[in-house]
Image 1: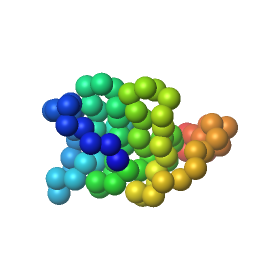
Image 2: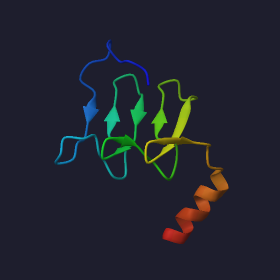
Image 3: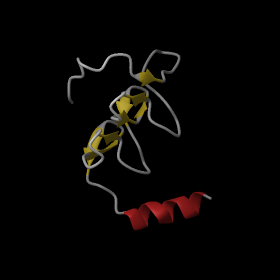
Image 4: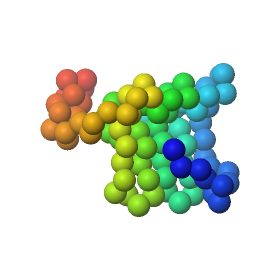
Length: 84
């Protein structure tokens, strides 16, 4: 995980316990565009990468805090259709 000394005051969402947490969007958004999806403090996202860097190219995928291989887009679309 990268240290973010230079960019203070990111926009953050927290749960009642003070952990980074947001459903349906990133829980942390830095001013340079770096975004992290977190649930109860850990990196987590089922419908895309949980850590998207400001360059727009670097994407890291996590489920329940564990890094996983990227999920192909056709499978993500299929999941969305099932849940619609």
